[in-house]
Structures are given as C-alpha cells and as structure tokens.
Image (tube, rainbow, N blue to C red; front, top):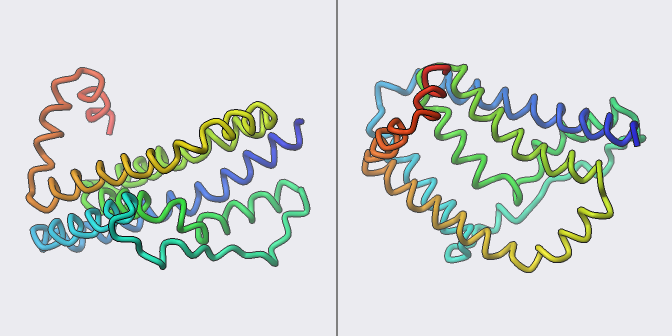
Amino acid sequence: MRSVMVNSLMFILGFSIVFLALGAAASTVGHVLRTHMLLMSRIAGVIIIIFGLHLTGLVPIKALYVDKRLHGLKGNSTAIGAFLVGFAFAFGWTPCIGPILGTILGFAATEDTVGKGVLLLAVYSLGLAVPFLLTSLGIDRFLAFYGRFRRHLHKVEVASGILLIFIGVLIFSRHFAIINTWLSHFSFFDKLEKLL
C-alpha cells in the first residue's frame, strides 16, 4: 500500500511539473503580448468557445480525441518510473486535458504575474491529483463508484462545454471583469486575490 501511494505521488509530481512550467511560460508570453490585449482576448475567447463546442459534442475536433501515449515507456513500478510516466502523461493525454488545459493556459497568459499563472496550473494539477490519490487509497471503492458514475460523464462534459462557451463569450466581449467584480464581493475571493 505504501509503495502504491509513493508511486501515485511521484506520478502526480511528474505531470504537475509539466503543468506548472506551462503556466509560467504562458504568463511570460502573455506579458510580451500585453500590447495586443484586445486582439489576444478575442483570439482566446474564440479558442475557448471552440473548446466548449467540442466538449458539448456540437463541433467535435478529431485531433482532441487522439492521445499520444508513450507505450514503450516502462514504469517498472518504481517511484522514478511513476514520475516519468506522469511526466509523459502531461504531454500525451489530450482527450482528457486538452480543452480545459487550453482554457486555463489562456487565463494564465492574461495574468499580471508569472506566480499567478503558475498558481492557476497548480490548482489544475491538484484537481487531477485528487482522483489519482483517492484511487490509490481505495481502488475497489473507486471502481465501484466509477461504475455507477460513468453513465453521467457525457452530461458532465456537456455542462463543462456550456460553461466554457459562456466564459469564452465573456472573454471575447471583454466582459469577464464582471465576474471578477462580482466575486470580489465575497470575502474569501477578496482575501485570495490579496494573497496572490
């Protein structure tokens, strides 16, 4: 059980490093492109809308259904092997992470600091990490839950797609600040913004 948990943590560390680096890179590139903010927000809005349409199934993008798994990479059930597989996972599992990751990278590119972009991707990595950790702790229970929940996955994808379309429209029309203003009325988000 202990080795399963260690390997899970190393796998998570592997994909987290890639995502954090992507967040830092997106924020850095975003600073360079800040002079073209109106154009960039329009492009980001369109891309997010397209990802949303893909998730709803209205405009399927075949390239996002292709995964590039490194089948020859052997984990050998060691911590280093799990780390390498996690690292490879971050680069190759586009059907699961493509649209959402692309949207978050778009947000990271518009952040004021590299730290904020990295934080966005850290939270994203945490969201991916939790199911892996829960699975490693109780694989039997997880499989039973997944068997019951699997029939709802399409509904979750469609709901995520609708949310992405809504966010894309707000970004394209430069009205995304409305949500920031609304969220600032909640003390939790106001404190979180001050920490960042």
